[in-house]
Picture 1 (spheres, helix red, strand yellow):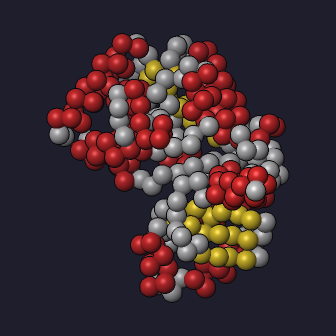
Picture 2: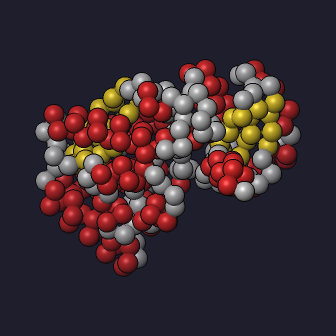
Length: 276
């Protein structure tokens, strides 16, 4: 590990040691897995991993989180939560409302288990993007040790690779609500349709993927290398047939490829149209 990255990691460990105990909102992703590893190194058994299980988080993500926590020998609790009533219509401030609800619950749960500190895996790059949920974390005084230590996403991946963490090259994931246009009533059927579609694509080897839904139309976003794979291996027909089995009437491949906030673009365009 180069000196700059090692200095950041040493700084992170010192800050965690001072806490005495730490509960971590653990998704099993790149960031929270790295934070869990550092927490274990700094605090030993005084670390608790908390994973939320809700209809808008894919089942396989929860299972992966469970397996990763077990491999690290960390106490791990899975908390089942229904879709909060305030986000059932997928409002524009959904992320803020969701984070407020979930982290209030997690903070209370951690306190009852004797953990006075709750942290998430936010990193320095998160401050450069539109992340409404960050406001909720600040209001609830949730710790973000990776952000405070100056870790970027690239830093976390590089350090994770150096440490032999299997999550170092794991694609970024986000809750299934990000696949649905704002101001759309959420249904369990819709969420399962999206989850099954993405699981099918991942099993085909298309790892970085989003299936954005627009009524009965599925819009697949993925990276250029996976677009090439789809055409090279002649998967278009197979993908279309399977996603229609899951309930979509139309299946499209987005030519602009995968990008974060793909559904936000439509929301912003509508806002611009209204103002214009």
